[in-house]
Image (cartoon, rainbow, N blue to C red):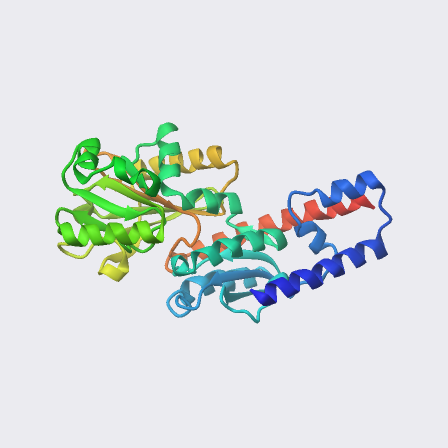
Length: 359
């Protein structure tokens, strides 16, 4: 991160120098300009950019995520923009050299989560971050967003959240009683790719307890849900949104005899045409997300299952390092790039108006 900090310092000096040199500001106008919600307009008005967009990966996902990330990069280049793909851990890259930063295949983020969160915050100060920071932060707390969406009328999988501070208040039997089932799933609140997901009693007392201790050491919260038996046969269906519109669906089918829907556990993913009922359900979820957060996600994956009541239910959302499969669905990368292009142009137009107001 040293390169970023140095770049920020240099950029700040350049910004101030350029503003002093170019503009004679009245006190109230200066206040209005510097109090803008985002520093992007300040930077945009004072420098030349090398890139319009950077798709963000990380070192461990660099090879695996290349096809997905480059589909977006190539589609954005076709619109006349300069775009590239860079790892979060690339200390030599000047992150102030791009207008837009799109979080993509940084799938190993939980191995460096504090740095990942700081990266988001830093990027939000110097560029257009996609998804917007408030959306990424909101969807990172699974227990919170599931609760809010439930309150908003969305059917979700009932979840018991056990935090470190109230650990003594819960027993396995108490959780089972609260959920109304004996066959339960435990997962970390910040889980990724099915890591540390455990089934009780199937996985056994010792493994379950060891995994629970591990989650409590690394995080401060574990989530418990009833095992949803139809996932084994009907899979999990992801409905992908770009700019608020449905793009395509993804079928995530566990391996035979398994329940995990992540490829690392043998699950198979394929492009899928969601049913009208699934599309309607997912659109309702996306609408509620927009109402709660106050912004339209640039991209969103709504993961839907058929629950134990034989009804559609929300399993989870993905709006950060979401695997969208845009490289496998015809036109999806172009749709994503076109939305980002419109967003960037609108933001630049706003910056132009803001600068004109100051002059």
